Image 1 (cartoon, rainbow, N blue to C red):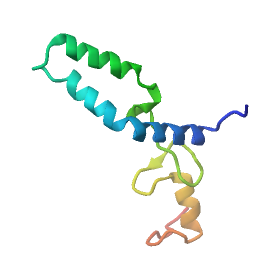
Image 2 (image 1 turned 60 degrees about the vertical axis):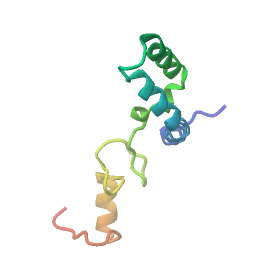
Image 3 (image 1 turned 180 degrees about the horizontal axis):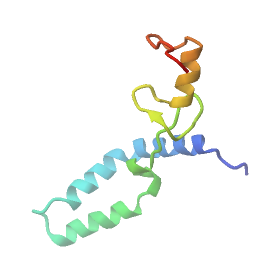
Image 4 (image 1 turned 90 degrees about the horizontal axis):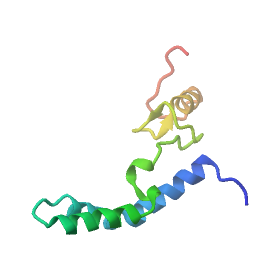
Length: 101
């Protein structure tokens, strides 16, 4: 079996997060509701722990859409600083003017 790249793994995590989002939200609501009995809240926490770890939203890593680089990521543009610079130098990003790089 071939080793998965980090980009492919991250896409799998995004898919799992989307799949289990409603179930996780419902269980969290039960677990954090102070008006419910302690046993019921504890049961919700156990069910939440049984879900796949990668179905948690915090496991998603922001990655550049162009290169897959995880660091220096601009959220608005969904790309890394290096990809931004390269595309900006080629004039492929509208409104971006090359200053002095």
